[in-house]
Length: 436
Image 1 (cartoon, rainbow, N blue to C red):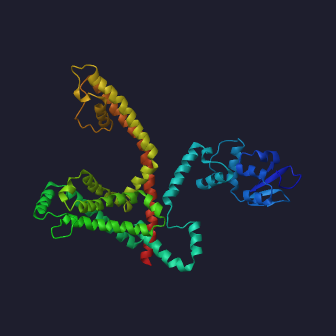
Image 2: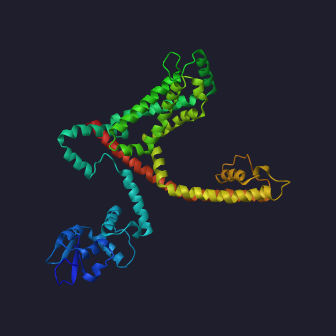
């Protein structure tokens, strides 16, 4: 160590008022990276990049950090036990202390790692984009008071379109959007009815025009669809214009779904123009029929306005490991039981074999409906060993499905309470706005 009081055999670390004396030899190979960096400091400037202050007379290095957390970390690096969270301290605060001193989350005990993961998920859920961070506040100060009115207007517009419970105008806008979604879904479902298609064919025989062209022979369903598409397009464009980060807006799953639901309509319009308004040719295309049916994704737009759908999406995001584990359980059991059932029902006795179990892929269908206790009855074992295997398959399916579902259920309840808390916070702000 080339910096410090000459002749001193030890240094003093002052962490939040708690002093620790360390020898110079121990400081060189100290397990905490930030402390060991003091050994290579050659000037006071280098020291102040590592710690917060330095007293040359006492040869004391001051760190403005949590003293109790450092005590737990110091006990761990000295080999006196395992690293766990300090009592009465936030998990994220303790984790920040670990990162500061040079440790990682992997050094924590497994139970504390799970607590840290849950806490990070909670923080991500409660994070609100309308609460500006340090950079946003610095940018606001740098912009000056002239830009404040326009910035507040953009922020109010963004909250109105993104947060349905943030204001009275946002609730009205959300209600109108829900009405358009319901109307579009009703029209989509009704257009598949035989009577509806027959009436539409009769109208087209009287006036063979495209349903997207203007004129008196245009179908009522086409008019309703065009109005709904216009509303959804305008809503999506406005939300894009008032968003803070355009790249982040494009990457959001709900915005991608909005784009997938709107695009087929405009593709159909372009195809109508390019085919000379030949509606029969347009409807004959399988691709266009698939694109038209993609309008069913409009139902997912309801996730912006209902906590239930938001809870489902957040639960699937947090429990993707459990979902993968559930799929692995099902696939392994399907491979085992399908092979055994095909052997017992078809492979042993070819004369009295069960034709439904002629192959392992065919037996997989029976395994999946048996493990999920659906039992359509379209295929079933007829031999005694096959029936015994079927009973084992059903019981195994109940057990295997119940194990991961328990974790998914608890995560669903937790996500529901978190989103209700967030919704109640916006409701309180809405009540204050209404009273004012």
